[in-house]
Image 1 (cartoon, rainbow, N blue to C red):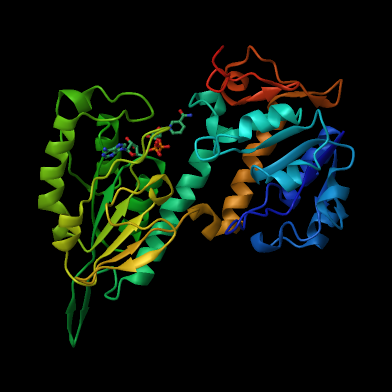
Image 2: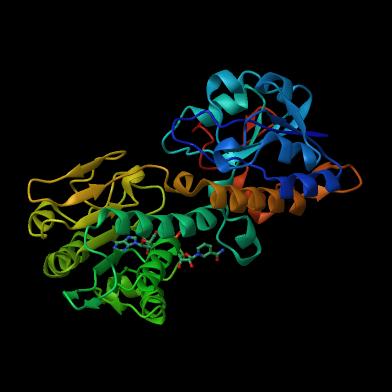
Length: 378
Ligand SMILES: NC(=O)c1ccc[n+]([C@@H]2O[C@H](COP(=O)([O-])OP(=O)(O)OC[C@H]3O[C@@H](n4cnc5c(N)ncnc54)[C@H](O)[C@@H]3O)[C@@H](O)[C@H]2O)c1
């Protein structure tokens, strides 16, 4: 069976869905691997490296897809590439189904079996295939590096003959995978760091990284025991807003990472809070793609407010650290295909009763099979 990997075509996407290391392992499973020329360049992988690992380099997408049974991608291919995919192909990628509602029916119509890697259930067995975690971790790191770059004062306290530079004060909002890595990176750079979250489990994790925990501890937050936070009530949001109003302006750098699965990101930093910050402060909004945790974030842009606060709202943070992000993402995909590999048939076997497959398989044999996307009967 042939597996294809193409150049990512969406604007701002620098990652690639395979590396020379994963190509070797895919070939060891019994697959042949075809890679479109230039697919790895933005992630610092040359065609020669892919070829040395055993891949066939093809001049274009159509040639890579000819006879392919599996397509690995970072983001779901756009319609013009999808039209080149042969019926019956297994497409493994991130689908962004909330931002792209026509995608699932289109995959079914094209008889492409679609696996949405971002829908991986958060169970122990699936951890090594969890693309949200692998990419969020790197995003959290990268966010801090960009904050440090934009902040014109420096992170650690520096005592010099010419005077003392105070340490940067950093507040991280949302202490999930990205937030915890942001906290750890800010600490390594020498900042004074605090973190907030609604899940009680996050409290100890924040403290264990040497940061100060700030949060609303009430009955509602005590119930946030799952891996994802729920949408919080108006009453909770009011308490959190009071706490943030007293906290945000005391910090130089705010890193926003709070997300609620399948919904718009909660707005936690209001325009009034931004207006109260000192000139030169930085807000990094990792939630920009989901609307942003800061009311003044402009998704995809960096802006400076009238009072001199820079708000960075980049989309696609993992792509800004594309070499490492591709390495981990490609590993996640390799683990997925290896886990569901039928070695006698030398083909993947996606058992639909398996919890992982139930979570990620959107379409099969021309039908929408995921309960979230099956159209309601008329
Ligand atoms: N396989 C597994 O078991 C598995 C895999 C991945 C993650 N996890 C766990 O799940 C947790 C969250 O993962 P994530 O980073 O992907 O989450 P996420 O990206 O969905 O959200 C980021 C963080 O924002 C927080 N948040 C949401 N609303 C908020 C609000 N109003 N105010 C403040 N914070 C708010 C969430 O609690 C979360 O910690 C982590 O603790 C992680 O360890 C488990």
